[in-house]
Amino acid sequence: MLTVAALVTANLKNANLRKACLQNANLQGADLQNTNLTKANFNGANLRKADLTNANIYGATFDNADLTGAIMPDGEIYQAQIKPHQLKTEFSGVVSMSRKVIKTDNAPAPVGPYNQAVVASGQMLFVAGQIAIDPRAGNVVYTDDVTKQTERVMSNLEAILTEAGATFENVVKTSVFLKDMGDFAAVNAVYAKYFDEATAPARACVEVSRLPKDVLVEIECIAMI
Image (cartoon, rainbow, N blue to C red; front, side, top):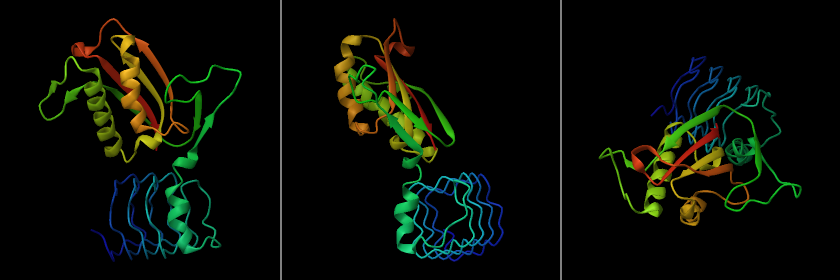
């Protein structure tokens, strides 16, 4: 906990301050470039002339914080006309505002919970393909149940995204690999629980002859943070 901490001109570049309590902290002139500040508490903090360039402030709160002269994640100088009570809403939307869903009637409509394309900006996070391995036991689970395997896969993806300071809302592209395309509907039913159809990422889904450890499904993703 860093509440009421004096961090004037501190170099916190690239630091991981996810969920940090920086309430009333003195961060005047601090270097917070590329810092993970997701869900951090900056209520009442002094951030005058701080540099938050490319910082991830998804879900962070800034109630009554002083951001006079601060450089915001988009590189712009903070505009004082934004009232303190608006900061939480404005900042928590920074990540979601970095994406734009592309739709056109001149290409086939999606046949599942995904979109034709997504334009996104930010730092790219490449998440390796995940299969139904329980990290606690280290072995494949639910060998004959594609629904439960998909749930395990999505849980593994979520754990990695969380560690990187992201959520499924940050995901802009997924690739789904199936041992049997006949499982498409069952996998879709689970997958759809994790994405809002209106803002779901672009996706590819293919059948392959075999997957690692003979699992039924593997999913990888790309996120912007």
